Image (cartoon, rainbow, N blue to C red; front, side, top):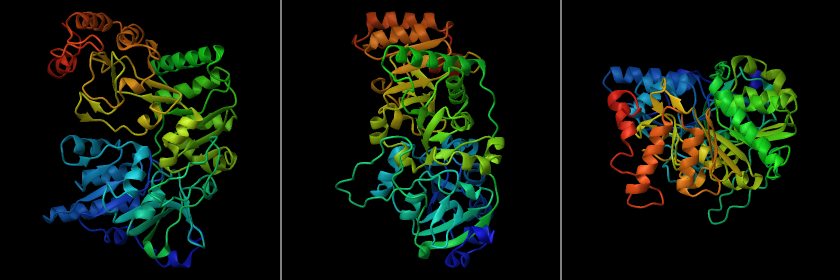
Length: 504
């Protein structure tokens, strides 16, 4: 393991996770590495959670504030949430224990656009950062740091933190060195220079994170895998949604609105994203590219077989089998993959310049195209908005996808009015369910409603939605976006009281 820490100044700071965790005080704010279950610290957060449990058992108050890149893993979010250790959390999470704590009011949660975190933090809007706990693969002799499987906000936390704890994780292959691209940040608050990225593979920085050695308080040696979970095979619903998207893109190519090799792709995480990637291979697409947040198995397979020539992201999110092959894979994809900080992977300037095609999941959409990505029944936080809005507003084409119903058909994902809006109808171009695809470009609100109901709603709910729209057209105060305010949210109320949205 000594070969992973080449700097004598850093070797002098080696200590155990428990000793490093003892340096942290009640009320401290900690910036942790990690993005979508990759590259997060494992040992120190778990040790800190154990320490806080002991403090609580003695009747002592001890809670911390946690900032990350996005979601992390059970050793971090889960362990700290179970210990009732988190007072404040940002900007995204997906851990069930953390979600429960947020929705019971135990954790105050700031859900942020992932592309906005860095600017807000550097401006001081989020307050002081006491600590950064960052996982790395290696410490070079001159103190530069080799990032692991995600970049996220790592350099940002290293820059802003008063003190730093490094976890050097030998589970990650050294072959990751060279995949990353970390730009130098400007301190000029009055004029920020353009980001000179003109293609997904364009590099603008260094492969290494940097941090002054005097800020390093501890170096902890670990050997622990990321939260790599097996992906289930795409189900019939996901495959149908993917087929609608592929057909639509082929139609756009045929009509001269897209090039044969498309535009850089962005997809969210999950079964639908995997199904869409598989669909590109089956449909015979070639010379594709990606400018996205996360590289999953399906995208990595397209990179390995040469269908995707260039891919830019901020993290990997892989199955155990794929992650286990990373020592070999990292060498094969060198020159094809770039991992960047999330304020670059999600930057509106670059997304708009590259004219990305964005495909993101939603919880529900209303008949006019307003999309809810975060809050079930308008109030229960699921995960967060993530980077979907960074891409949706700035992409050349923006898809939002969902099954037409969930919960055994008791919940319609197309509703008269969504009680929480993350993406207004102005930013939503195309909605897709397994029932069909609604291209909303160029349509006025009532036209959008008719198309969404006809193309995307489940047949069991379609008559009730048509009936609602027609009555709204007769009785609404205005006719531009007709709504019956007395009943627009009754579908959600009906589910909460009777267990189904289905009108009686």
